[in-house]
Length: 294
Image (tube, rainbow, N blue to C red):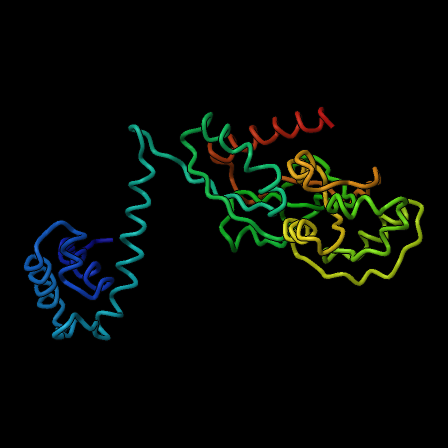
């Protein structure tokens, strides 16, 4: 594509002035004079043949023409800034976009990310969380860490480790629980998977009560509710080991029910990049250690 000469100084001056609606504040940001910003905007207006601002006694009002131009400039300058930030120490950092189930991200991944970043400084990791419902393509993810059986359409899935569920609650609630049947008298905090509590009671050889407690789309939220005394959560103890170790939570019975594992997934059509290969190798090694310690 053949590009005309781009008046970058004028475009930058307009973009800053439009964000601040002030030549003075734009000048401070750009480390130039107010007169220089005004002059550059005027040059741009002359080149385009339109008025970009209405000059008011106390600031600026952007015109329709200015509003049409602004989003493209903001996106372009943001993308340029993002690219320049990826160069560090004479090397370009490669962006890696990972989406993870919130429970996994908080309970397992975050405490270990420092080691990954230390060993792979060329990777610019972008992490987002979800409630296990994710569209890898639409969200632009390189990887998605999911909980389930590994069967997702058009997806390569590598198993990480299982995370069986068990009852978790405050110590003061746990003291009143002598047998698994006693949990039926408590508020049962649950996920959108309706078979989890019934499976747990069956595994505990206890009668299955009506399951009517509040529904959460994240084990993190469910356990937070349990920490605030709202009831008994059914969540993976492995992901809340710090709460158990500190005594903030207790697991009243050694009864577990398995409903799936955590998987590292990517689209089959997605070619591996060096950053993706590095992350897959690292998390695979961490998962082997986890399985060995279980």
